[in-house]
Length: 166
Ligand code: FES
Ligand code: FES
Image (cartoon, rainbow, N blue to C red; front, side, top):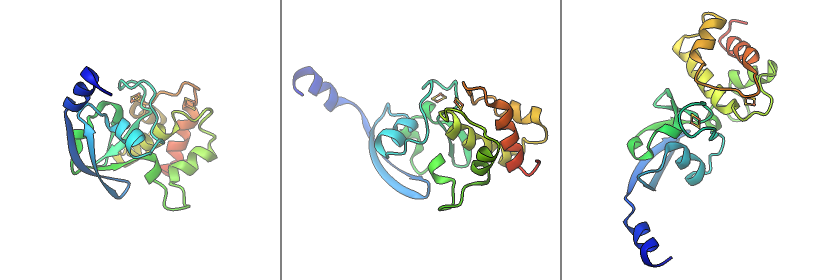
């Protein structure tokens, strides 16, 4: 690269940050415009979190940031210095699936699977938040996660199962 392109690349603001992802500390230097989703997928090789809309509308990119569910496509990585991030890759205990992963299998709660990582991470938070008193409540609190295959009834049943209500 040379000329104006090289100059532009050299002048792109970048920042160094340290964050913990699934229990592993990472020190990275990123272009300030990098989203958490791109940091995970492009820099750390964690491709479980999916890029659906890249605009906060589908939930395919859902991860936990300091225990709270977030659309990782909407968060700038540079804001996360010192944060603890959990992705779909970090929720099983070795070979033991998380209860909600197992429930998705038991309830056959996916078809193409593209939305599934986000659904499961969001479902874990939904259970932790206590929003599982009824199918209606689960639907409401999972409404930020879109499933184009239309697996919603089974997803609700999976969340109920993992919450111990089914
Ligand atoms: Fe982030 Fe759709 S990819 S909400
Ligand atoms: Fe295909 Fe949800 S299983 S989008």
